Length: 577
Image (cartoon, rainbow, N blue to C red):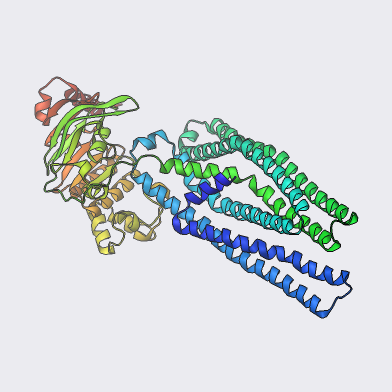
């Protein structure tokens, strides 16, 4: 238990950790105020026993009792605020820290880990920490401190009852330790079931169109139902695991209180304890029971807090790419790859590639699916680091750049466009949040999307659905081009930007791309002939190697993948039903 509490404290940042430690120190004072109730009752009992109940005794008891209640109230208010602030602030800071950390992880991590896992950790896991951890830490530490202070108080008045109380607390601690060991197995299973549930729900929602199209709603629903039941089972199973231990803890606390009362009465009868002390020890037994009973229920959640911390720490412990380079402004935007090799999961994707792309030229990368085209552009932009060789931008190794200064040189237009659930204007100005509306409209006009935006009910203030669900593919693509125009980077990477666009949108999209790529260094991955035939250099990638390179006319004179590619496309275009 103490190890988990310490891990939670270490997980918090310095400012929030100080708040938690302050709350613990105040908890000691609160426990002392709680113990004052025994003194107040003792003052009344003493007056009754001495048959000398004066106004002075009554007022003394009232003042002590009032100080005890008021002191506990004020300290409870302060400690609750401190621990709540520390819990929520720590989790909000960790969410931001995780987001920043993910930003600098190699892209391979996101292939290894599903969206559901990342979503679960940054939402459910952190939400559980902010809600549950605060109460668990507050009530558990409060119970421990109150029990400790009362035990010290009891030892001061009678060491025999103190030993009896210590024995009861020791048995309670042993049961609690056994419960922690039991939850050590169940809590990770519960968290895993939670991650899988989030993953399956996201998959079901995102793929609902395909599911309906292939009439697999019933089958996919069964998978979702199975995952929900697995989550239900893990939750209830964990509860059933801890219920016997919580019951035993309550039995031990009650028995300890009963034994303290019985022993006190026995010692009074045999004359070894005064009636005043006997009554005070009996009152102490009820106070100890109260503090331990509160702690019993919440201490079962300690292991869940530990698992949440472990999951968040697991993401944060993944080594970042070395991004602490210099803020470099390259003299030119030539890109050069020297003997570049890259492997993923022991499979070589790029194998010894040498390539030079002069600035202000257009390079088209073509080749069979899975040949390494997208990976090559990812290496240029340092989404991944090469295993061997080097990638140069303006004569400088991309590893010498800080990540932010490197990204300033690149703009991307992907085949799959992601737009945020926000206004169209804010999606366009995404890379430049403070850009004036005039600049946004100018970029939209260049991207050939101004007309359809103004036809929408709220124009540029129209809020689009998450992922751009309320727009067509061509409209989303043009908005992403407007976003890239706003960034105005010297190197543009087009990854199948026109692959899924209907003929009606293609002409507008082509004009938008022409506006985007004026006087830029262009690197395009494409399968359409008319998007590559005018390129300054066409690079054919197959099996991670450059198998052909040159202009369209040159490559058409050679037997090879490119000519086959062009001829197949011509046959496909001329085919009619």
